[in-house]
View 1 (cartoon, helix red, strand yellow):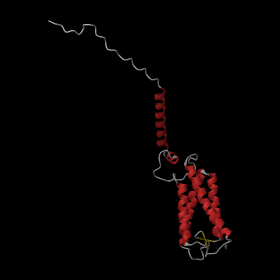
View 2 (cartoon, helix red, strand yellow):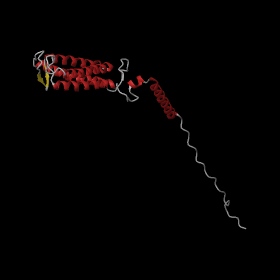
View 3 (spheres, one colour):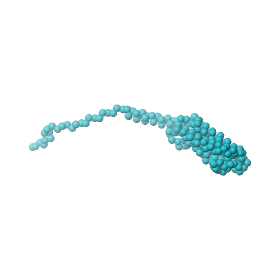
View 4 (tube, rainbow, N blue to C red):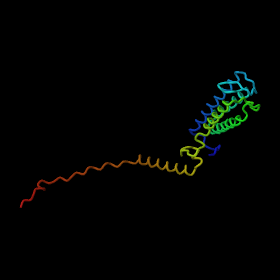
Amino acid sequence: MRLRDELPVDHRLATVYRYGAGLCGGILLLFGCLGFADELSPFNTDGTRIAGLSTNGLLSLVSVLFGLLLIGGAVVGGNFASTLNTAVGALFLLSGFGHVFILDRPANILGFGMTNVLFSFVMGLLIATFGMYGRVSGGLPHDNPYWRRRHPREAARESLAARRRQHAEVALAGAPKAAPAAPVEAPRARPGAHRAVRP
């Protein structure tokens, strides 16, 4: 259940982290750019509806910044993208919980509405899932690089057993095949050998 910077980078999960960060970053960047296109007031707590969400100039700026941050993480990729996705996802979840208590109040400087709270929860879970996929779990397969890093002795034993099996298979495949044994001919009976003896 730990996140560690020294975990392996060159593995198949890096593709999930990269595309997850790029997808979520693109959504946030698009939402922010739509807000700037409408020339919204920076601190309008009432908000203006864009794509079904309430927003203002400040929220558009925050969306663009986080979108660019996630896209940058997608460019870097690897464990950096994973850790970044997890951190940003957690921030979105905290933002959703926090804005539940300040809706329709002057402290709501981002112009959040209830749809924004729900969007924050959904987007936070999505980003965090991309970040923790295959990395934070109690039932990882044994070929998962994170499982192998957390269980080095068992991974070493499994690797040794796999190498031994591979060597045994190669040895069996390269061993010379024994020549087939020549068929044994039955001895020929001599003429009259089986004649019945008459008294």
